[in-house]
Structure formats: structure tokens, C-alpha cells
Image (cartoon, rainbow, N blue to C red; front, side, top):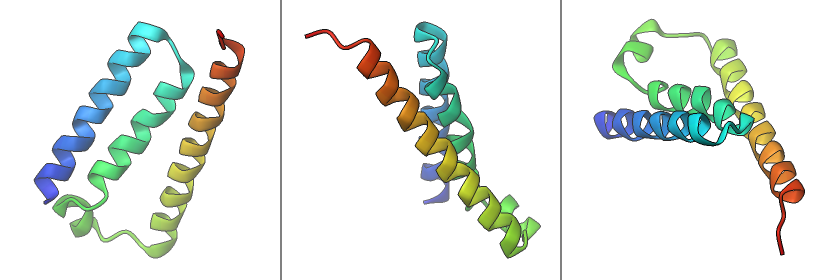
Length: 84
């Protein structure tokens, strides 16, 4: 399961990077670190480092904030570029 998780989130990082280069949307850049963190959080290397709980909670909160910001920027962009 760990390998599948790493592969999935690596593909997602590449997707958001290509999409950013193509469309130049800031919210795509915000999702790249989230994908890296989500893919690396349960790898054996990170488990070996054995970070303390405060460190893990801080990174969880940072990832949540980045996702919320990305969604807000996405919604703002869709509202400004709405064609009906």
C-alpha cells in the first residue's frame, strides 16, 4: 500500500506541476506540497525518523490550510472567469 500511495501522490504532483506550467494558476502550486506531504507521511523513512506529535500536528494543520487556500483561490478564479 505504501508504494501505491507514493506513486499516486507523485503522479498528482506531476499533474499539478504540468497544469501550473500550462495555466499559471497559483492554486495548483499550493497543492504540490500537499501531495508531497501526503505521499511521504507514511513511508518507512518518515516512520523511522519518528517525528514528535507536535511536529506532525503542525504539518497536518499546514496541509489543511494550503488545501483551504487552494480551494478559495480556485473558487475566486472561477467566479472571475465565469462565462454563461
